[in-house]
Structures are given as C-alpha cells and as structure tokens.
Length: 196
Image (cartoon, rainbow, N blue to C red; front, side):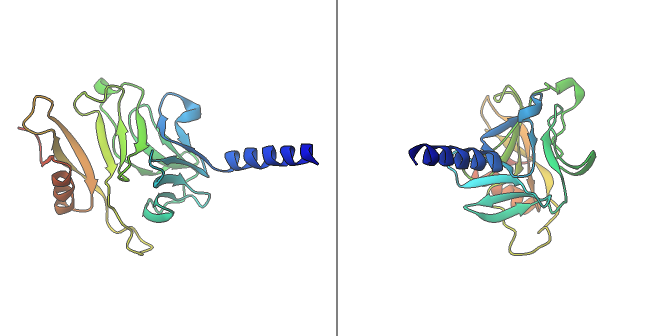
C-alpha cells in the first residue's frame, strides 16, 4: 500500500507539473525556453501575476486568478523572438505582437520577457543597464473592466527613465492613451516624453 501511495503521489506531481508549467522568464535564442505553449505561463516572483497562453488561444495576464489583460486572439503559441519582439502566432501566422522589435544594428539575439511584482510585463536585452534595452509592454494596473473586447488599442508612448541623471535613457510604455502613459511614467518617477 505504501509503494502504491508513493507511486500515486509521484504520478500526480508529474501530471500537475506537465499540465501547467510556470517560469519566471523566457529567453529568445533558446527554443525550449523561448516559447509559451498552451497551459504555459510566466509568473511574477511574488506569485500574484501570471501571463498565460491558454488552451483557447488567448494570451491572458491574471492577477490573483482574475484576468486583467488579454490579446483576444486565437493563437497556438507565443514567442519571444531573437529580434526582441514578443509575438503570438496561430500556426505560422502572427496574430498579436508587442512591437518591441529592435533594429538589426542593435539586435543582440537574446531578449527576455517576464512579469514584474506589480504586474507589468517587460522585454529586456542582455545588458539591462544599457539605453533602450528594457521596455514595458503591458503596464501595471491595466484592467479589462469586464468588457469581453479589448478596452483600447495599446500603443507605445515615449518615456525618459531615470530623468536628469547620468543613467537616463529613452524607453517606451504601452498604454491606452497619452494620459495613461504620463500617469504611469509619473508613478515610476519617469518623465513622459523623450529625455533631453
């Protein structure tokens, strides 16, 4: 009986790990770790936020089990590509993208995507401190508002990170409006608009 229970416990543990595998980050250039397949997700270190490629094809950001953002697409998988773009595909056809593609001269072939403890989803390059290699693609605090349709068309807006310091650099945040982007920048101590 004891061997049966140990075997059953191992089987259930293995089944639950293969049924839903969460990671902290995905990195391009490593095929096994650069793709979100159905039932795979990225989870914040505080375990509150999860970005999940669902079996219904939707890529969804959850906060404590409640959906707060979605692509509203019918994708089969989502990939962090070698050019820095996070793209959801249906087969080989792109159905949604983060628009974080880097020009060929700055493409480092290894980009990472993850979820911060505040729910913001980011893409960064191998040298995080370098200008322009870090970008929020889904800002913290987004909500679906119970609407089955996307609340807006997210667009990138320029921000200056660490303004007025030697470390300042230009980046962007995706938001519904200029006002939302400016609010988000202000909440993080950034300036809305390009660095001067």
